[in-house]
Structures are given as structure tokens and as C-alpha cells.
Length: 74
Image 1 (cartoon, one colour):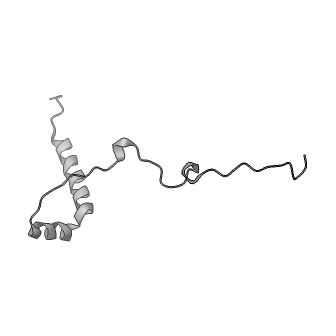
Image 2 (cartoon, one colour; image 1 turned 180 degrees about the vertical axis):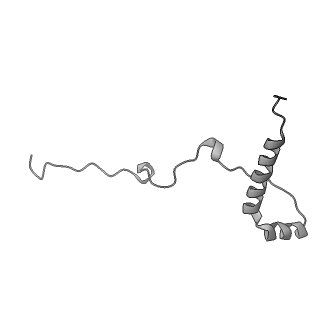
């Protein structure tokens, strides 16, 4: 085969190159949930750390609930 007869495969279109962020499993996807707060509480929420603080607080307090649940082995 000569160089003229060798052909390179056509490049893939941008949507099929496997580039970009890979999709998350359904269980790991974040969902939006609205909360109504007064302007004063919004400022307090931001001062506490906003979304990062809320995520940590929910996880921390949920672990406390899990520890307090009766196991049924009593």
C-alpha cells in the first residue's frame, strides 16, 4: 500500500469525542430545594458559610440521628 492509499479515519464530531465532564450517577446528582428566609436570616446564612455550611450541618446532624436510633436488639 502506498502513502496515497493510506487514509486516516475521519475525526469524530465534537459530541462523540468523550470530552467534558462525565455524567454523575442518579444518586449523586444534586437537586434544588427552595427555602424562604427573611433578609436578616439570609445574611446570617451567608455569614455561617452558606451552602457549604448547610451541607456539613445536615450531614453532621443526620449522623447524630443515626446513632440515636434504637437498633431493636435491646
